[in-house]
Image (cartoon, rainbow, N blue to C red; front, side, top):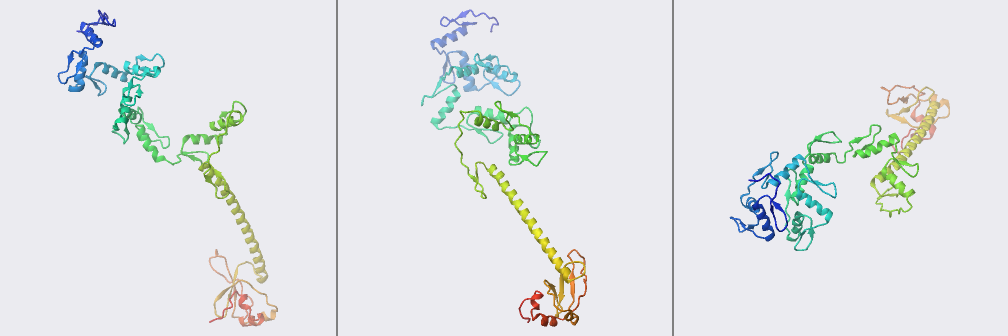
Length: 416
């Protein structure tokens, strides 16, 4: 039966350490002498203390884990490990590092942490003599020499890890979350970071962050925040050596290097792989080339607008000239194309009219030809403008010396 007294009457003669019972002292003395009186019944292994024999039997032969956690499914062979495990639920870290702010739930992790400050590397590879601070690091290193590479696969996603510790960290970071993670683009919530990351792939290339004041849109929120400064004319990054201010911190850093840092050395010019096909100007980034192309597009649009306006003015001038000519030919109001009915009974469009000399020729003409005005396409029907002095096609030929075909827009081909 264990005593609750703090007295340790049994003192080791070698290291002056005290123990409560004689058995504990005897087990301790065996560690100095190297005596291993405790033999395993299932294998030829020997141990210096009875506790080591009990742990060996449970770990190697019976696999018994009598100490179980009341909060989770964890179970342990040793009671001390169970106590350390319970601290992960309570958050207790009683072992403080004397050189930094690190605190550990058990002495083993604290001892391992102290090697960072001391530089101690007790684990050495027997092949290449590399040294490590942790035994797991040495075990992983030896896989380089043996060629063995264990794979620890995640049960939730397709991820694989080379170490069990890395797999545990992967599960904690991606598949464990205390509260839902909300997507900043669409507002949908997800239970862990892994599902959130998979969802973010659906927004890849999509410009979800839109400006409320203009048509600007961006794929990242920080770009939209920088853009909003153009509307407010705010420049939050102030130079501490002059009165200049900037909207972006990188522009302030560049200004400081170029203007106020005499020791600054400009980096060598980078390659400009993006070329403009219009003016042969080159750029480092594709986005700068696209911005530059807008200049040519605006110039082209402005030029096309001027050309269209010029053509419109020319068309209006020609229309005015045609109207004045039509008014000299036809004294009635209104303008439009004129059709002429030939001897064959078909209607022909009169493109040009030659004023014939002498009014007697027009008076003596026959009544086989009539001239009509064709109204605009917007008119629902065609109406006769007026019946001018009718004249015979033969009389016109005699007066014009057989050149009337060209007058009415006919060709010089003979009729069949």
